[in-house]
Length: 126
Image (cartoon, rainbow, N blue to C red):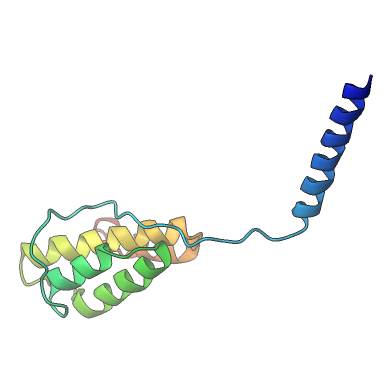
């Protein structure tokens, strides 16, 4: 009979501890980032170049940091008129567009993700 009493006490203590924790917000850790598109290991290119900025964005350690870096890359390297210099630029920019869209959705930014989706050349019908 005494064992049952100790077991009941332990269960009650655990229930009270859990109930006390429910009201507190959980400490949110930054989400680790792993890009969907991986770039083969290559010597680091200088920042300011398309490939260097792509490597910089892909090397982000958190999703939040990656969002900022991919946005910056696209602001700097996406051609405003949609006219790419070559297939290299087109492939890297389109990859960055998809990666940023994925991150926007993962962050819960549905409107921003939808806006990026609407601006993809496949969706616009170019």
